Image (tube, helix red, strand yellow):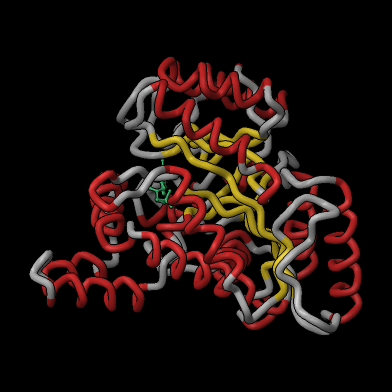
Length: 352
Ligand code: 5GP
């Protein structure tokens, strides 16, 4: 594990509210419990439960959102999540989150994202580069400190309407200078229709935003086909593909964000031995190991590499290569890619 921690890594599929520390969730729950808004012991049991089906995970997210969705807490969790990834040598992080509106506390999608940005600016344990080249900010004196690149993807929740999805895309466009580079489609895969989100996704593409879609978490082959035909720059999961869609995905070489622990914990894949990582890896299909929800699934990116190593027999060289290859699939510009390659080169000399 130590070696996996020390290796530089690239995280491309991490949901902000899924990456919150359990200790923070429990602390927030205790406060709401004292105020009589929730019953702490019940919430504690839900938070600490180990195995959950995909369906139960979405119920947990509704609970997490009750605990976290006010401006100051959103700011706090953003800082903590970025610092946690940096502490295990993630050198580039694409953090995704669903901008939320909650009129009762005066929260708009924009003010939610402003709270996220506040959290990013409050990171102090590591230098953060969060804006496009030329706008580097939040760096401290000296070059010996650790540095992490952070970029944001705004998620459209499958419960949302076409209008709400469009609002998220417009917000992403307005926040481009602050490091928002793309759009994700996520949320409960049995909710909503592809056609509902398509206008907003098309608009995002026309405006030059990058796209990644949660695809194939449930065996809806028609939707999977429509998503692949749409040619997103990446997809997440790809668990329930049938032969035709595999062929299509492979021929188009669309990179897949693989979340091993998440897939096993949610029983989307019944056992690690039959995970599609193996087939894609052997076929040299572009893939990236990611955490999905490090808090909810009690994992970290180093842990995902360790798991791939023990389950599929990857050695240090293969793991390092896999981590470095991820640079090809990031949504940031070539300058960032070059800098990351240099970081890996230096690390390659140091690591044995
Ligand atoms: P947030 O966007 O609130 O920061 O992060 C949590 C949200 O991300 C969840 O409410 C859900 O919409 C989405 N999410 C997290 N994990 C998964 C996953 O494994 N599959 C899908 N489809 N959505 C997820």
